[in-house]
Image (tube, rainbow over all chains, first blue to last red):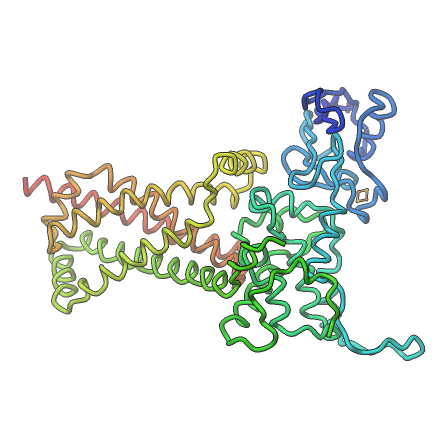
Length: 262
Length: 212
Ligand code: FES
């Protein structure tokens, strides 16, 4: 069977050169067996246009840097085979994140910001003893931590979420999933009230409208609907069950980032 | 930090509104489906329909139920409506995003916002004309359907669509069941109710012809 001749349409814009308006450029490309978008983009840059900007690091769906919109869907370019796509393929940068140029966006700053905002680390008063044997954890808990932990922070869930597209402060599935990970971790000593402070709000769990584009498009297939619903139920249960813990609800989150764990 | 945002912040209220959205939505779907089953009794027999209407009237259920539902109806408008983007730019982002993704659940949300507005107008007219010609009886209803057939046809479809997708979304957000199975169950119920509603409209139309 003859190889298909693909037409690759790519969004072009460099914020550093605002006088050049955003445009779409088309490149012809002959399909080969097992071809991924990673190869396509690299060959276009090597052979057709050296100014094309896009990100790759691991090319194995581990680092999360190659996420982009492929024919309307948020996808990892390195994990996407051309075989399943029509002859004409359109590539756009992820929305929501800051555009660096062409297909490259800055997801790092966004994820660092929400990490600080939600204090995405284990809060414990236990003193670390490097010589002690690691504490044991039952398998079920370990698996429940492992599931959300598989997130590679590619940003597909955020870009796919219509709420995140219109509400700049909405934290999105990746963040809520991350908080869920700490909520099930027995080593984290935060009270329900402290979690409520972080995520029990319109920018967090109550802002989700159930559009499920996150769940549909997660390249790691993390069960995001389950994670989102879990956090929503936990936060509602806490909120309705009185105000135990340190439910200091008047206080905004961002300047609590970096607060000590105690 | 912005002072006005910190002062106005109330996470307990944000939870309360989310719960109010859940409860008002559930009540309205429950009401709508019950209402449609009551209306559907006309298909079996107009006397049954009249007896039911008279029964609800006699035990004051109509006088408690109707004002209650009207209050819930308008609260739901405000509470669920707070999620609808108001600026043109946001609405355009929403529309473009739905078209780009081409996913059912994002599209149905857009239509939920649109049908919500349609229901506000159509259901308000419906409530007005029903209350104005109190009490409910098969003959009055038949005349109403004769007169407002288009209104009832549109209201049937948009109402059932809005209720069905809204209920589905509640289940999705609270995660009690697998969402694909929930979707199929609600889809089936919605189709059945729409068919029954169409049947009831048809019976009313024929009844109306005989009366006139
Ligand atoms: S290049 Fe690392 S995920 Fe695609």
